[in-house]
Image (cartoon, rainbow, N blue to C red; front, side, top):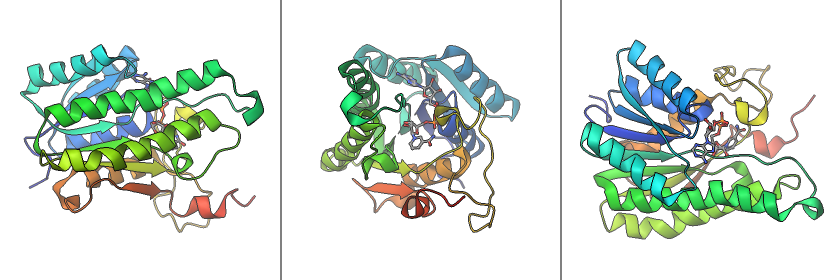
Length: 254
Ligand code: NAD
């Protein structure tokens, strides 16, 4: 039986990209899914895709930078499905590419507010409200492990997310919970303009000679599902790079 049968999963940023792929996979595995996004229409679209495939899901509109919205999304999950077992805190934003010396305070505040404050608020709710045995995964980035000269606010926010899971893990463990981060390399989603809202497939075989360093949302979502499942019970407080070795050969060969 799937690890997610009869379970409830909450996914932020579930209206697009990695988050939508994770919602669809979790529903296929039998989870009831709470699709959270600040964009109501795209969250609804994810729910339609799931229900059309025979799964169960609800859409919740929320801004992860808001403490009240973080509480409200867990309230909605508990009201609809009785509790939450898996929280995938995945929503995030990129910034306009600028050199470090031109990075404005406004951009810094906006990016930190969503990517780091949002992850922190979500993690605190997850720790308080996940059922024992549950797990939380936060989406950081390869830019949370190495610096990103043209997107320093983004990189700083994702380094913060890695610090968040490392710092919160012992406290999660005290409640029989786990928290880990995934650090994707380049992913084919709307975030980096490589695709519209729908995810585009990368070659399934990452040793394919056509492979140019970008993953699909589905490939990244698979790793998130592993970390949300009981199969990864030995992992807590870890930040897993998910890049099929592309960052070690960056920039991709022409
Ligand atoms: P995406 O833009 O396709 O999806 C992000 C979703 O998050 C969107 O639906 C958006 O509406 C939602 N969102 C943004 N801000 C929000 C907020 N304040 N409250 C609620 N929802 C909000 O992008 P994606 O590539 O699927 O990104 C998912 C995560 O992966 C992000 O945290 C991103 O930083 C991270 N990531 C992406 C890449 C990449 O190359 N695409 C690489 C590394 C990490």
